[in-house]
Image (cartoon, rainbow, N blue to C red; front, side, top):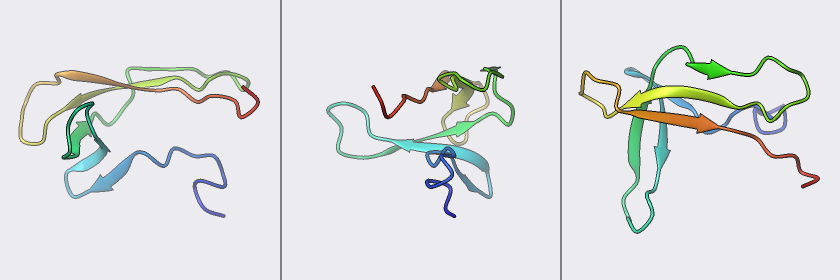
Length: 78
């Protein structure tokens, strides 16, 4: 089974620099890349929940964590 079929997060990618996400900001045509910290700063441990997980993120090549990336899943029944 694929990660999508297993309902795993398919938005987080990995390369030689570590884990990252790609996104397109509103009004922009070019995608941006944000590197994620190895461990989340917040996550839920419940079985029945939205699965909210937050990571600190930064631009590639920078030292400071400037952003927070939040993942939250919605039920297909909503």
